[in-house]
Image (cartoon, rainbow, N blue to C red; front, top):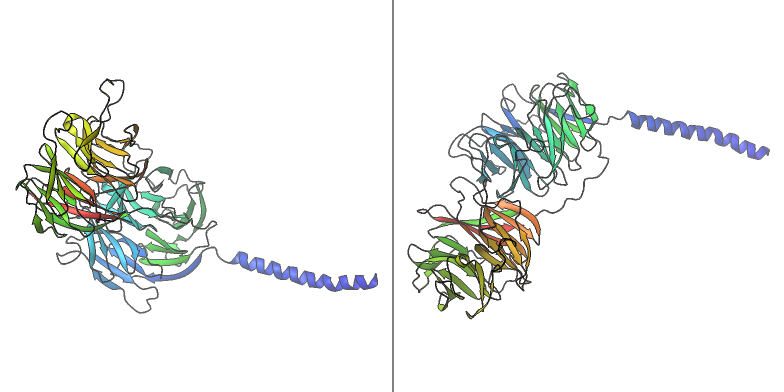
Length: 608
């Protein structure tokens, strides 16, 4: 008993010492600041903050500032020392990226590249590290791909560019190469529509956060397809009363940071719970004090605060998020692969090499063009009125007046199918052609799709039952285009219902695509090698856009590439860019006729 007691007497002080040491460590850890101050960059009296319109933070800690009035970018290294910022003019003369000044927002793309908005010309540009334009796109207006006073920009992990389109009260979404995908927040429902969006941010799940310059500031949150999720205001967020939100950023984990210029601090919001999670900073001029914060940016855990009132940028390290950033889904996108101006009524892609098939109604001929739109050869057969075409790895079919002419890939006429009329095997106003197991003819005037063997023998037709009356909806009222998939399902673009009607190989109706999309005209259909259906259509707001369906699901959308001197019209064609012998293709050619007297322009769109 005595020996055991002695051991306890010895262990007692040791246990107390260990406990005391643990308490000291816990206290030291508790005293470590949640937010760590890193550094300050102070602007000169006349410099980057004279007309600050936005800034971007690179992963290495360097910063690029957009100067609205100078039309210049200020590049500030992560550890500048005595090194002065590099000033790169990008706007103000015809020789620069933008002819007009008035820069808007800016977003970091990587490898020294940034995207910049111009609020006067309503254009966007991707600019390299030397200040040279890789591409300039968009245009002034309210249509698809057009802008009105673009402000803040954001670039996502899926390499999509988001633009706060303030004048149009929406956010425009573009691929990295400038192809317009869709818009977010447009509409008339005040509960979900945007009002004066000025800044935009995106998290790792591709949720979109928009700061609106209304009242004391408002943050609206949408999913990646534009579905409304939540709206935050200082009045609705617990702990944010009497705040005035004027800047926004979001990290990949979905943590929302806003600048509260009323109280001179930065607040982290839990948007799902609707409460302030933490604050830091105070009004004033010193370290961690703010006068007028114009923008925030975050990269990893490093948060940059652009305080134009104090002409400084301060950098802070935020604590790790409670939950890790979600693994981002890989979202489909498109890039503009090529473009060519051609003097043709309608144009179709022949192959991935870029060759084009030109239907030249004015000269009553069919011709092959190279990728630059230059004539390679003309078909020997004189045409009456070439108006539609279909191409596969075996043949070329051309709708010429009231008949369909079948050519070899080299342009030699093989035979002719049908003539004008209403009997079986005859056509009235051919809307489109498709080559697959059969030759499919959208016989629009006769309200049917006729199917012929590849030798030109009529074997079947697809039409509404004659006895259906008004009880059964008309599904083949005015067929404008037709395609099939690998399972021989038939897709018919119907101009009467303004939907894509889908039938089985046995010609039994299955379902319709496009409900709620607002199609006014369907210009064409195309099916790629992965079974995706491309629907080229027009709506009230878009002269030309493409919906991409995988089965019954709308996978994504994109519109015509919009840029200076490039404008979509309501007349267009779409065709897969296939190579003879190839089984799949990720490219689609969009060709639009600019006007009756002007050339058509073709863009090859490649899916990523």
